[in-house]
Length: 232
Image 1 (cartoon, one colour):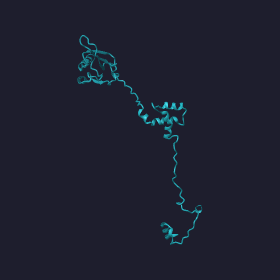
Image 2 (cartoon, one colour):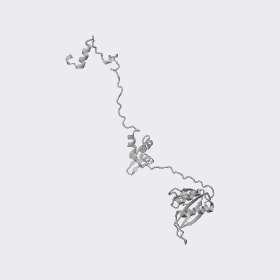
Image 3 (cartoon, helix red, strand yellow):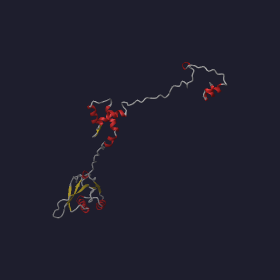
Image 4 (cartoon, helix red, strand yellow):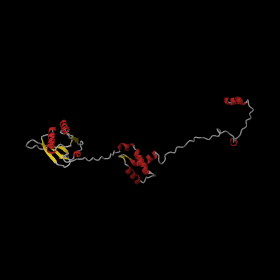
């Protein structure tokens, strides 16, 4: 027997020859004194795949996509819900699932319109009488006998009192003369407000207002309402 034994058994046989050992077989059910290792239970047990649950992404996609995805586009939340209910294809928590699906839809994220809250225009304080004037140039109009084809309009922000001055062109010199006329008649104002036209946004007007200590502000480009006293 020993000749046919494997090397491990032979090594243990040589080790045990130094002892007076008697081998007795005990069935496992009767071996109550066995060591803990030989009776160690399996710690990790394999877990079977639970598959698709009611809240899984695949389940929601399979339920929602037939009603949300269309050849003409992706329907919004209310339309998708209406189609599900119309086809009597509701399921537990379907409204929540539809909302979650639409929030995660990459196509909807790219095409969803951006809605920015509108900004209200702030009111501008007008101060006292003749303290602030709004200026604007009207024209070109049909020339009169003296060759005038423009009108420079100046309006008091407080009283809405209006001065009109005829002008030959939209030059900085014509705008400067209109401003000097206002100053000569009603005193030097604290502020003037104009659009950003070349007749007002230039070196001559800048030096003139600086010399007189007048604050010059401009209306917002393409928003005539910001100089609404003299612009329609």
